Amino acid sequence: MPGLHKHPNKHTDPDALLAAILTGETPVFHPNTGLPIGEEQVLSPSARAGLEAPRFCQLCGRRMKVQVRPDGWDAQCSRHGQVDSSLMDRR
Ligand SMILES: [Zn+2]
Image (tube, rainbow, N blue to C red):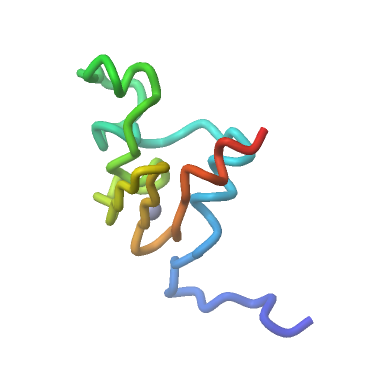
């Protein structure tokens, strides 16, 4: 099957972040603070309620490019791809 082999030095996976969130994978880094999960997190009330857009990639802790729209938000990690709030509301 072509495209199955990934370049060993390239760790970019444009679906990784979305897949991790949709499958409920335990985050490695907190999406609001960028700190490793397990460390003390200081969250604003709205972040605690899950109302804020994630600012950091939960897989690598990089600061993501976030765009807040009237109807939601989208956030992009340069390595792990893009997530959109509209995709998460679908349960
Ligand atoms: Zn990432």
